[in-house]
Image (cartoon, rainbow, N blue to C red; front, side, top):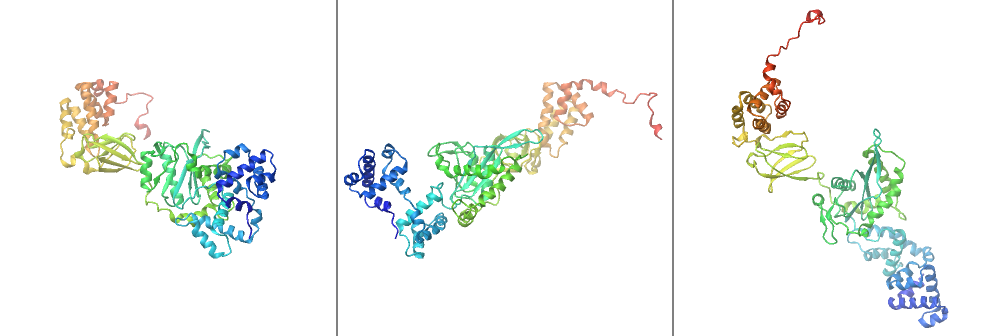
Length: 530
């Protein structure tokens, strides 16, 4: 059986005593004491003294650096430097090393431990290594084969997300303007399956959309998402209890995930995705280098193609790829995706107007609300496709979102006119007020009320028209309505333009203008074409 002499020396006694002897060996050696004398003073065999001196010289560290190291760090340094070449040709070690890739996959599954896997190994290889050496060789193998992964990631546990520091560019072929775009990166902890996409900004809409695209790319939902402290996710960073952005909190709640923002100035808390960013610089950025993309969709198409090659490429020192590792160990631990994708919702507070409508200021569009909420404060929660209206905690209306400027989206049963509900604004009151201005104004208001499918949709226009009786006077308003009736154009804007341009002053003259064409020798007349 092959033995590692140095390993046995380090483990043969209390390591604090041994490490103190190691420090004495190094100190005495640097003072010029002979190896025989060092062995006599420390009580160690001369061969052991020689090996420690040889490893100390090979480490390249100064005596001062050795003194600053803790006993644990010093011991680990010597263990890492143990030569392995003389065991790698041993058949027993070869069978052990062949077992390690399977063991690495199995450890990602909850419930598996090194001890359980050692029992499986020892059952297959009764002459194999005992548990302590089994663990020791596995740690050495993992350190050499996989120097990036220092944390044991459980399958389906976490998705890490971040943005690459180096941006990509999109060139508009018409204007030749160059737009820099952000590059979003997500990675699953256990399998290291990676997702990459470009987006215009890091704002919460783009950030949440990218996170959701990553979930759909992976085909499932992990238990938690680990983010940086960017404003799109965290409103106020804190080492213990960071405050999540309201929209992001709603997103993770929709997908039943826990949000775990990394602690401020602690990049090691998301070291996996930091490493993934460095890898995609080599595997994806290098593929895109030199190509020009006219839109972000083409850029993302190219990224996806390079990403597939990256995920299907075998991992360094292992006989499987990220995709294979994901399919074998992680896919079935992800929670299923909801039937519908998440839609980011914004919040807006407004008052229900006297015409049964509430205005969504962002679109300048009006939505109907049940008539008995007239004058109440309501909350509008709106996404890209839907507008929900709440009074306190009760949803009182829901509409498909419409971005038609100054348009009206109506549910007929909401309207006061359908329920004989009298309010300050209703057709009879507007007609009555118009009659006080003059007959032309009364006729114009009647036509305006009939211009839309529902009279409520014209109440604001009627109110605006009648307000000119105070600002411009009843006579001018009546004349303006008379002229607008000739145009057959019924709106507040029509009356406003007539009054601003003073066209109401020429109403009498217009009635007497001869509209016939004067005779002229150069005019052929209608008989010419017979």
